[in-house]
Length: 193
Image (cartoon, helix red, strand yellow):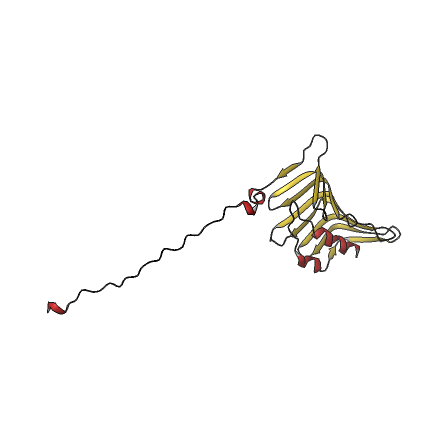
């Protein structure tokens, strides 16, 4: 149940916009495929060893290892996918694909925060944010990207994603000119006999 809740929450993430994730994904079964798994009941965690693939509808997570944690009182729930890189992708309602990748992808259900650490990247329709750490709060729709050392946070925005649809000039259609259909009369041949 912990993993299913985390996957549902991850499905709500939409990089750099407030587009909605496919609603049907959240109603689908969660399928986890791994080489092996270990349940550490005493420490309230399940570890999946990989490669690990998680699929729920159009949601797809690829990782070398996946850990699902909960506290004793089941209040704090966390999902951590690690890899070189760990990746997350989902088709959004508008048909575009949103992707995220990093050395570590961590989702905290209590704070609804997705944290990408180590070569972090969010991408949607060619627009992207890269940095060492990217934090995205789903409820607040706030994104914070940070760099490390002399590195920089890089943001690429595609023109079609930047323009506000309300600012686009309306295209006026000109009505088709009406064409007059005239019947041509054939010359009279009655008087030529």
